Image 1 (tube, rainbow, N blue to C red):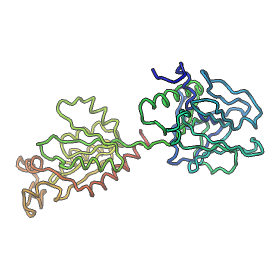
Image 2 (image 1 turned 60 degrees about the horizontal axis):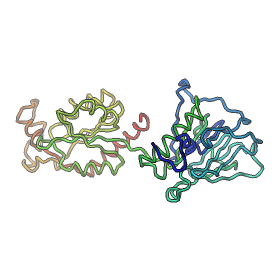
Image 3 (image 1 turned 135 degrees about the horizontal axis):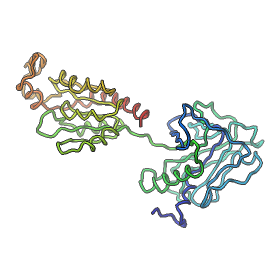
Image 4 (image 1 turned 90 degrees about the vertical axis):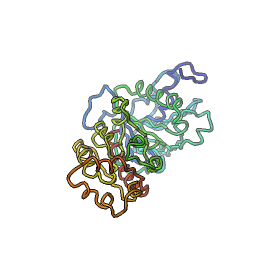
Amino acid sequence: MIPMKRRNSAATLIVCLALFAFFFVFEINLSSIFRLIATRSTGIQESERLELKPMRTQEPLIKAIGKEARPLQQSPPQRQIISCDRSHREYDLCSINGPTVVDPNTSTFFLMDPTTSSPQSTVEKIKPYPRKWENFPMARIKELTITSSPSGPRCKVRHKAPAIVFSAGGYTGNVFHDFNDGFIPLFITVDSIYQKQDVILVISEARDWKPRLVFINRLRGQGREILNKDEAKRVAEEIGFDVISFEPTDRTSLDQVYALLNSSHAMVGMHGAALTHLLFLRPGSVLVQVMPLGTNWAGKMCHGEPARAMGIEYMEYKIDVKESSLVEKYDKDDMVIKDPAGLQGKKWSLDVMKIYLKEQNVKLDLVRFRECLKEAYRKAKVFMEKEG
């Protein structure tokens, strides 16, 4: 149960986020201030273009007031182009009935057809967050401007659908408020007011999603351990990844592995059998294989070529000699260090395997590794924005 002061019905929540409704053509100029998510109703067949029949200007705006969604009383067109209801304790509700363009740089919504508005320009201010009575969060909510002034910017992206504008600031990020002030009222609003319609969700103060990176750890004492893995993970977080450590064992269930990796956008790990989990990555995601000394051919054959064949963005981080623990045991001119390929010849003997796979650990050069992760982040971000 979700408590609400002086409210006894979950239906009351439908008003919380229905703060703007734009009918006819909604036109928007994208930027980092607003994130657009087009939500398609299950009652509409998929098509190549988002297309709805425009509503007539004489039709009343729909607003959610009290316990049910009710149409506004019809009024002359010049009075219903921009209207605001500020009588409620929890929220303000403003509506525009007409083609509208938003300038994200100034957080301003412009009515695009001033000939239908009143002779004098209308200007309204609103903070689209449903805790109007609480000063602390409201002081941190971005204020938006609605105007009938015709001096709006030229739009770059167009939508023929109603739009709901709301803020993801305030207490967003706290799971209670995510549901109480966000998901539930937004779902009820869309489902009750905009049934069988496409709806554009315009989010003010949207937070950037972080691509998820799975960092595969090796068990201690088995060789090829990344000695400064904690520092490497912090570098990945600084770049912008949501980092999850994963240390698979023979008791790790495959459904658990699949759920983790198939929902991720990138994976980083040392050359070894654990990289076989790349089979659960989605095509287009990123795999970074850390290549210790003496493992180039094995890494390419076992993981690099299969990853590319699966459509994965495959990357290699080949360590320098100074990053290998073998420099502490062998002289820099020893064949083990100087020419691993020559030492191996065309054979992968047990003695050679022991040196490069069991005796060797790695301490990453974090400056070099950061550059590799930056490129991985760029690719993972593109994949996330495309596939989710």
